[in-house]
Amino acid sequence: MSNATAVDAADAKMDEFNPFQAMAKRFEVASDHLGLEPGVRDVLRTPDRELTVAIPVEMDDGSIRVFKGYRVQHNFLRGPCKGGIRFAPNVHLDEVRALAAWMTWKCSVVDVPFGGGKGGVICNPIELSTGELERITRRYTASILDILGPDRDVPAPDMNTNEQTMAWIMDTYSMHQRRTSTAVVTGKPLNLGGSRGRREATGRGVMISCREALKTMGLQPNETGVVVQGSGNVGGIGALLLHREGHRILSISDMYGAIYNEKGLDMPAVLAWLKDKGRLEGYPEADHLTSAEQLALECDVLIPAATENQIHSENVDQVKAKLIIEGANGPTTALADKVLEDRGVMVVPDILANAGGVTVSYFEWVQDRMGYFWTEEIVNSRLEQIMVGAFSEVYAKSKEHGVSMRTGAYIQAIERVVTVYRMRGIFA
Ligand code: GLU
Image 1 (tube, rainbow, N blue to C red):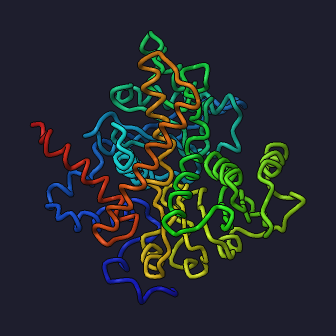
Image 2 (image 1 turned 120 degrees about the vertical axis):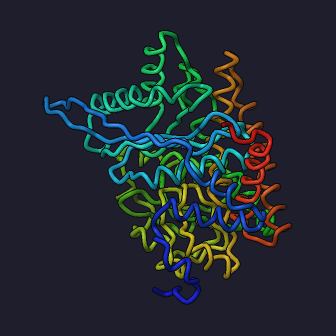
């Protein structure tokens, strides 16, 4: 292992690819800076509630399969739990736990009044029909219904779930409540209580984070070449918005591989191709690379916007970017953090960089509760204000404590949750 020498004994014992351990590691570092007492650390680290459910579903061919689903509520001190639901074959409980905790810190970093939660169903959406997906979604929702609600826990889209999934959740919840309740879930279709600007919000937040980070480095958009891993809701939209701002998008990838053009990709054309063909492969005006080759490209900015554990101890030495904007949750392992920090690479961490999504989810929840909907300009300008403010607070924290942006973000997030914890106390 190339960077083993940089790893201390405690790190060596941890499983680099376990997201919950990765979260706990960052939490510990920030808690040390804050001088938090052990009991309070325990309270904040431990998920409040974990629900595992069996989801029996009749498949299209008449057979019956039982899927497994989770909903983890990490912390509700600052408000109802908030966080997405993902459908993927490799979902596991420690991953959902980590994602739930990251939601607690993310909501706190941008100061939206939510705690953190996350859900997941172990299934492979590519192999499932729309009807099967609907039945899985509805039965999963029914099974976790007791812990959901606009004041309890408010899900949203995540990997492989979308506006349609959210509409099914909203309908299932509403039918059980015997009244229409739109604020139980966010990321809904526009005509069903969705918010303008929600679909683009995570990508927009990534673009804003990138712009703010480049300002601190004295770089202009037209001077920067950007590599984006992932072309879904975060990577695809993030790349499009950065392209519009004048950045050169050198490369973008999907689950099959990457495309590269050193002069810069025509992002609207790339996304039109992807929409039409379902994959980037065959896109004409570019070279084709493997995912590993893509991460090693010469570039100024790297945006991992696909999934966890993409930059790790084995490949971090190949990463050439000066700036990393984490569009995905947990794309960098804790061991890789250390190497990047030593090399002076600026990493805008997930809990800040991809917080645009949950910020506009908060706006959606507010609008649903008011029954009054905002224009896209209002949504975008409020998002801008929150993201720019959060970036500068985290930047200031990182300077104040002489730490990375990641540790600065955790310090900021934990401080806010601890303040509320000390006010509320322990209910007994
Ligand atoms: N799944 C998204 C995230 O990881 C959005 C969560 C939300 O809007 O509640 O931040």
